[in-house]
Image (cartoon, rainbow, N blue to C red; front, side, top):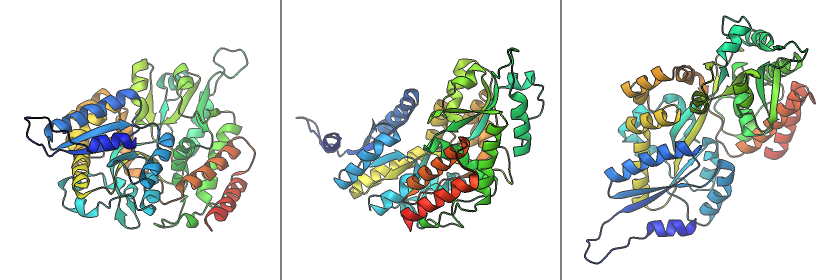
Length: 419
């Protein structure tokens, strides 16, 4: 990878041609699935055509768990990319390593700053400074099969936890009369991984819980013991298992949609990244918001763009691309091609995007939910908090521990790590 970066920085001048002062910029990304990478590449190509003095090379460097060793090696070896596409939770760690370029001054004079969805600023800031800009966003909702709702006699969508549990129970059925349940109301993710935590956090927030008090960005202040919102959210998921209306995914396979498509489950947690795949199948589907415990909530997902400290010339060129990535044009084309939600508020109101929503109305549920979206913490050590929370969720779903007992054990583990 260092070799690629070195080549990217070279300028070869052929005899008879004038020297061109082109700034080469590298973007490391893990955009998936491949059709989404094709959408990104077309947008990068458009930027390169309209900015002959800047040439961006977009490099797929694997999924995020595969990227981390490469990123850290590049930072330590003083050969980072100019731009990195990654989950915002890496922000604090890269800031502590002194690798990132703060963006406050650059953004202050950029017209695109006013067009960024305000709910996304929490994912951009650490210790009072802006360290990244959003690339694309999404949030978590509940996909459901309208035909299965109709067959079970359900005419109203559930809005509260209580209503949701009743609906999930009605949807759990022996459809062929052989005495065995062959259709479950809800599909819940099993595993310690980030997908489980990401899809569970909306329930904790909706139940009135917080990971840290106030706006703290200190991992040592994570408070899970006696966290009533977290206890309630764990109990709610556990109740769906104990009353027989939910089935668990395979370990770390909570994102798979096979059972949903086959009609074995009527509801499943997912996000707009699934829309294209489901639409291609021709299976009936729709989306409802996360049910409410005390207040509406959802998890904000998606990736941000980080700019690394390189040279002033490359930093300025990288920021120009970042501005382009934030623009109405880029965001509209990316959203129409991938299903991600635009981070640009002008893009969301554009005629092109509104036409897209008319063709795929399920997107509107995620757009309407976005105002209740919450970002995961970006302070250093979030990965350890997530892993510990994942263990607690898994132990409760498997009936190995009570919600309060699991969270108490989690708090003890985190106190050992951070205190």
